[in-house]
Image (cartoon, rainbow over all chains, first blue to last red):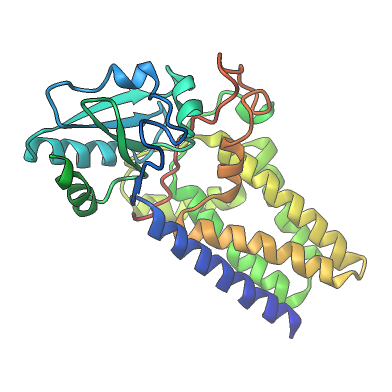
Length: 142
Length: 164
């Protein structure tokens, strides 16, 4: 029956897409450009101002006022920054700085940027970061 | 744009429950080929999109039957993207119902199947496709004042229980 075929196909396609999306959430994505953003341009001033010069890496959480998973991301970053030397955690409200989301191509929150004290983006994470993966991505830079 | 009228944020579990009911209804439509059932689902979508989530039939069931058994919500999500997503569902449901009613069965099957993909993504994974589209619309279309730079999609990533 064709209806059954379409139903099964739709559920399978949705299942595969959903699993792929879930797999990508919270994963570390390495910056493609040499300096800050993908095109090699510097990170926006509003971002650089949040970088802690005393830390090897600043984990900057990009948030918006209505953001259901931001508290969870905050918890992960607080935990990682307090338990790991050389890592600090900061937060930026994209609603106050819309130019940041345009420049960096950030479309969803929470997004976490890992930035060196020199102002270079190491990687970013969309969604709530996975703690273990975050720690191992940070390690070579500490 | 009406989706951006002042609306209170919603308990994300409500839309997720509604998505499951929608999945069941759409599967039933595919199995029966019923234009009437799909038209009824279209009405449900329309209520959610244009009247408001608080009047959504499945949302009413959620609040009456499901929510009392759960604790209070730990977070809330923006209503506007959800309403837009309902409008997208409405579009597919209308096209599908027209397809079934006028005997163009492939149209009915395809439109319904596409709506089912979106509904299942939402229900099972907490990924709201319509919401993601809404959040990428230029601020002008969303009824917001455009930001100083070129329009941007500052967003809330909706927690629909999607585990990382």
